[in-house]
Amino acid sequence: MAKRKDSLPRSEDFLEEPREDDPSVQAILEAVPPEAAKILREGLAEMKAEAEAKRAKAAKRAKTVDRGCCSGATPGSCCHCERHKHRSEEEVAALQRRLSRIEGQVRGIRGMVERDAYCTDILTQISAVQSALSAVSRELLASHIRTCVVEDIRKGDTEVVDDLVATIQKMMK
Image 1 (tube, rainbow, N blue to C red):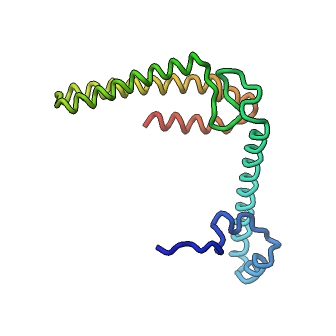
Image 2 (cartoon, rainbow, N blue to C red):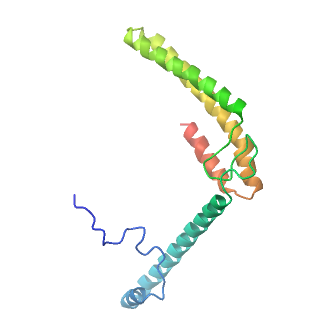
Image 3 (tube, rainbow, N blue to C red):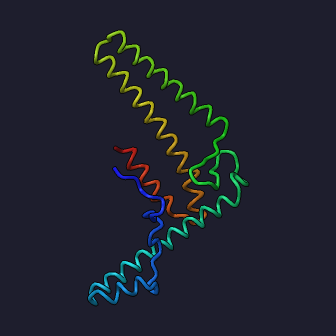
């Protein structure tokens, strides 16, 4: 497979925000039939809208970063940074205990396999681990809804609802 030359534009850099007043775009629009030009103009408008949405999202990220990580966050509440959450010491300890217990169960299953334990006994233990992981997931989801989702909705960020739906869909697989 041939390597990309550094002098070539990257796909994300090339025509990120094409402008209709660009001479090369004008030449293309004049060279194609009117129906095709109309379709191209619509495509340009869509690309411009996507570029504006990207810029707005980047500006929002920059704004949250400018505030500094965790400025004014109370223990156990979401931070202003994306994909970051402060948990209370009690919550962290409880999650660590549960995960350590699950980790021990998984090591026990490995030992059962090494000792040639009966298949249904191993499957029963695997089911117990899956149930324990599901319980941790449900606990984290409930905490996420009570803190992160509620906080973001209060701030007017409704994108968190789409994220929540996607998360629940992944959990239901």
